[in-house]
Length: 297
Image 1 (tube, rainbow, N blue to C red):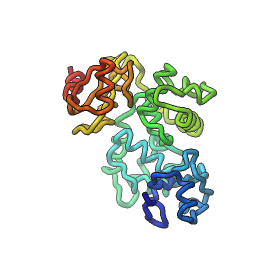
Image 2: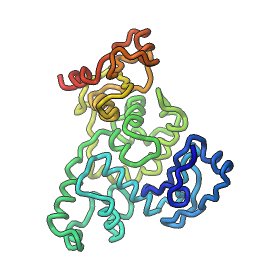
Image 3: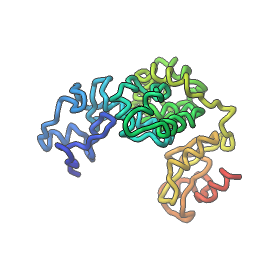
Image 4: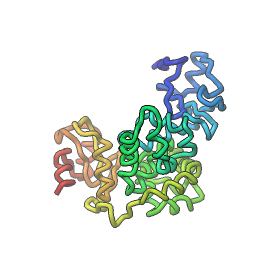
């Protein structure tokens, strides 16, 4: 599959990354097509480098404005904060209201924002309410909001459960990425998790002055000691179903094994490889509707 050519062979994202659509490793594509890749970030002028998985060109400048914007957007998206657009974040960065990271969102000068052209008192108040509406979140959601490469809520949740962490310090204290290797999470992702924690450590600590981590006692335990695997096409977003599992104390798996409790699929008569393996292992197969009944029971 050829590289999708957008803006000089790149699809520019405000995350400060250049994501390349590929089937082969980036190095192989460069050699095959003799592409002349840029060496400097167009946003800040910092050096560009290819990441460890050879799929993304990244800016090495930790103070890159585009990287800061991408980080903020990720947080806004994960916490489902409304009334704060990309343009709004760009304006706040330009005005100097946001300089360091996520924590700055919780220290915005609303008395100045309401005086900005295009905002006003009502707009400033809506932004304040939206940002402060969700201040009690799980540790896995907190970590996934910091835009760490390949580290979403499910990866974070698996590592947290493996470590038995209840607070971010439990994870900071681990000295080797091997501590984070677990089912479905290999060396590469574990190392990205560790490096991401260290890179965001100061911002995480500062943000926790405004965000409260919900402990095990406040999280649902309906699916404690249960595991679910969702497979095949279904009318529900898989990530939403997996989040329901983790929010209720269960584990979302990507593969069928002897320790799987339920395989969830739309067609109970499916003869897919996962279905066959589940039947061979005696794993119960249920529909998404049956799963939702379990959630709401």
